[in-house]
Length: 534
Image 1: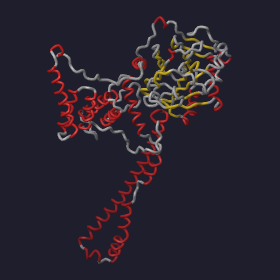
Image 2 (image 1 turned 180 degrees about the vertical axis):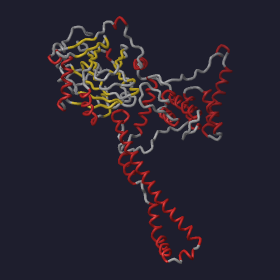
Image 3 (image 1 turned 30 degrees about the vertical axis):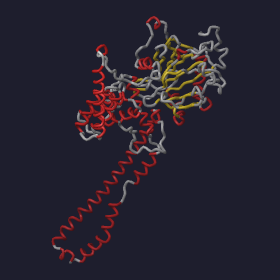
């Protein structure tokens, strides 16, 4: 009914763009500086054009006065030999100079700068990715379109609004994905803002065109017919709407005939329309996951809560922590999740971020079937890997993890640093390899991932929790802290209660780094038990 239209932003290149900006807030900050540079260049261009027009204006005013005097007595004026000479000079030389000034292109500097910067612009993938992120945040945090449009989000420092055109573009992104639920929500928001008198480049006819079809696709024929009639009131000649009107009326008449011909015992049966809402989900624990992201559905009882403590931890009498023990807090009991407070300094965090920023690449997952690394829609972040030999700070952090956990880090993976993007997330997953993935870490030769250590390197204004849907646990980011848990029981069997997720970042910039510790080297540090689930 309606052709699919991909969003194409002004000046977004196809060949030189660097996709994936939307997956890292840290890298998106570079775009702010790029845009600021372009604005400065644009203002220089405007100033040059204003100077040019000022010169032309002065010339016109001077000639206006001169010609006004000359036309009163042309013979007497040119009878003066100086006037005669200057007239010849003006028409032969000076008017040519003025012509060159008028034709002079003052935009060269701006266009040149724009051309250079354009290769670093986001592309269509980034724009659509950022739009999908807003839809994801809307669902995860139960936000209505008006709240998002007015920028009324928790913890915001710089409030921003969506125009009717912005809402329309979000609706179109949903439409191209056949997501008619969100298409309806955002087209209705665009229509409301237009009805309130907002001046916009889009018109109600275009909005109603998408809206009526989205509503029809969700099975609400009555509303679709009503919206189509409203569209035709604004544009009676709209070809597609006229066709839709006839089709909708035909379907409704057909349904009435079916109801009339039905037998008495079936007369109360009606055609059940499609249920409105989000599409069928591939993620079975979606509802639990999103509730935990909102801080709802946490399953810690008061009785269990009493058994969680804070303590000072010296790493089993480790000399480095005897005089200055680490601050430890129990976040959860089963699985046991421990938070270490003030365990990484601000200075160390900045060094790690500076090392990681130039290497940030779109985060990948290992395909369980092929073993290949690939990007996926449910992991929106960029990551980089840091080795201990590169910098003494990284080496010191690695040893700190070893000292506090008692596990050997020589067989661990490198320190992974991650920065989340717009609505950045990592949906529920396991860190360890399951039995149906026997070759997941075969190339490393260090066994399965026995434990996870996760540093929080930034505070997050809203969202961004680490949640464990299987047990109903939520752990919130706090800069300078780290959380630790075992992925495997001492027997080597996987602990399926450690399935966890990084919730979408609603507002703010989330930086984390993690260390995955492996089985090899832990034989005497964490001996096996005879019980499978211990």
